Image 1 (tube, rainbow, N blue to C red):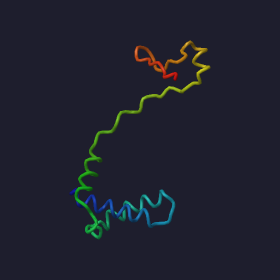
Image 2 (cartoon, rainbow, N blue to C red):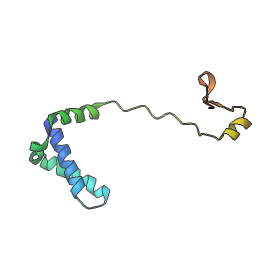
Image 3 (cartoon, helix red, strand yellow):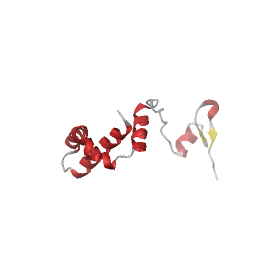
Image 4 (cartoon, rainbow, N blue to C red):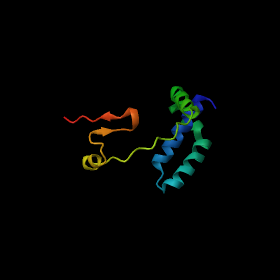
Amino acid sequence: MKALQVAAQFAAYTWYSETRQAPPAIVEEEAKQFAQQNWQAFLPLAHEGLGRLLLRISEAPVACPARTIRKKTSGQEEARAGRAGVTGVGTRAAVRDVA
């Protein structure tokens, strides 16, 4: 698909999504169909640079799953566990700024 067409379809999708009053699931499906059928009418509003950007974004690799985030504990719980003032695990432990 050409960049200008992608930008025009995005403009059509955005316009339809913002003007249609319905539940989000219905609007999304209708907006997709509207954009595919009516993108030519939005060509005067389309910017080729935006289309290139959208194409690059769509081709980008999917990010790795998020790392598990440790639950933050209060200072009292850390003191009881013998880790007062220290966050992190193993050799990458860092001393918290106590000031």
